[in-house]
Structures are given as structure tokens and as C-alpha cells.
View 1 (cartoon, helix red, strand yellow):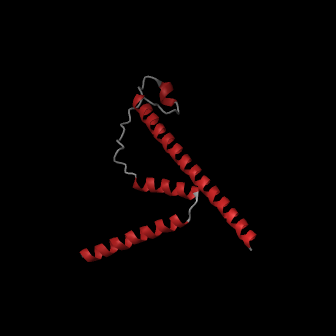
View 2: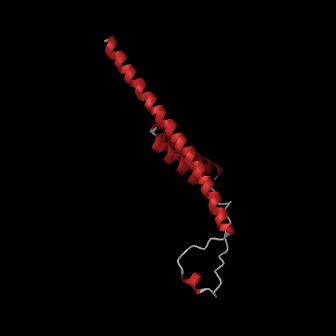
View 3: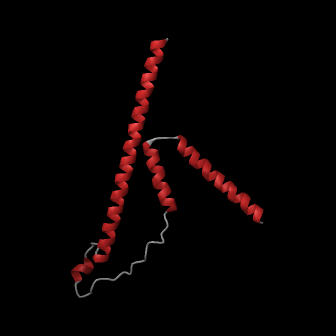
Length: 123
């Protein structure tokens, strides 16, 4: 039983590495960003999220009950601001990463052009 489990686990791990290897061969800034986001989403645990108890507004104010707006108290505003700051930080990091990859691709293209010119000049 244990051997079957280990072989199954090894096959699953190998399949995961094969998928990762296939993604790494397709190097492109957009694919890199997509892979990072997918990886973050797949490994992201929901253990830090805590359920929020819904507290309806007072029933003595019918305008609030009939409105279709989100009621945000101080707790919700703080959570939203924290999440916004985190997303803004991730966006800047990913933007920097994408720009670095674009610069690398541009440098490689320039090197390729120089090599072609040198090959044509020597032949």
C-alpha cells in the first residue's frame, strides 16, 4: 500500500515538474506573469481569512434597507484598504518584472541583430 502511494505521489510530482518545465520553455513576460499569478493562486491558503458576521442595518431607516449600496463599516474599510495596498504592491512588483523581461528580450534581439551583421560581414 505504501509503495503504491509513493509511486503515485512520484508520478504526480513528475507530472507537475513536466508542466512547470513546459511553461519555463515558453519564456515571455506575459506568460511569466500569468504563471506567477496562477502559482500564487494555487498555493494561496485561505487560513488568514476570517468569516465576517453580517449585521444588517437598523430597520428603523427604510432608505438604507431599500438602497443597493454596500454598507462599509470601519472594519470593512480597513480590510479593503489593506488588500488594496497589497494589490498595489504586487502590481508594482509584477510591472517591474515585466519591464525587466522586456528589456532582456530587447537586449537579446539587439545581440541577435549584431550576430547576423557579423556573420554577413565575415562571409
